[in-house]
Image (cartoon, rainbow, N blue to C red; front, side, top):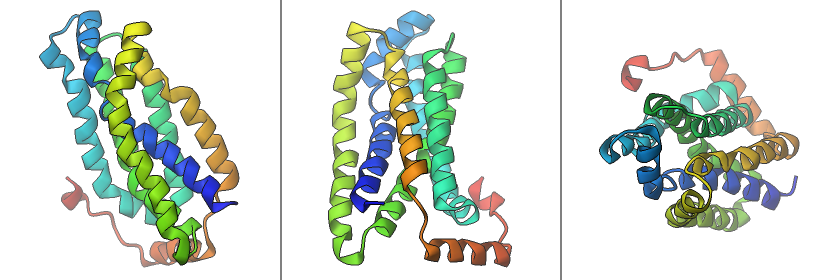
Amino acid sequence: ANPWLIAVLVALATFMEVLDTTIANVALRYIAGDLGVSEDEASWVVTTYLVANAVSLTASSYLVQRLGRKPFFLACLALFTLSSMLCGFAQNLDQLLLFRLLQGLAGGGMVPVSQSIVADSFPPEKRAQGFALFGIAVVVAPVVGPTLGGWLADNFSWQWCFEINGPVGIATIVLIATFFHESDAAIVERRRFRQQRIPFDLVGFL
């Protein structure tokens, strides 16, 4: 497939993930009022996502080598999309925090894998251009998040801050599954890793 198409799709998925670090910030008072909790309690909606992101990031390297970049990335993207939709249907704060936790765990594995996919899709002399496109998504998303979140909360409802990921995520999953194929070198490397039977460092992860 065209490497620019792969870069755009991967950047779009990363844009969604990074966007969710800030999109709920200005909607916290709506969330607190609707769910009947204080704004301090509602702030865990942001904190839970960020902590889960950091935790899953540490395990992403092992899981990618074990499962492969494409299956792992699609699994993370699917869980991220599903948990985003579930956040919009949450009936209380506990449910919302649980779904945000799942969303953060899925999103934490997407960013590093996205970079490796971009690097693998472009020849060495054009990788800088691919990473420039990827960098735009990472830099712009946190800036757009509060504005988009505030507009959605004011004009529709706070649920749309999460549900907006649904159609975008589904479309991205279908397109990546169709057009992205792992390189032969990546497949060989994964087989070699499986043959070595390296165990997961559970103690280090905990």
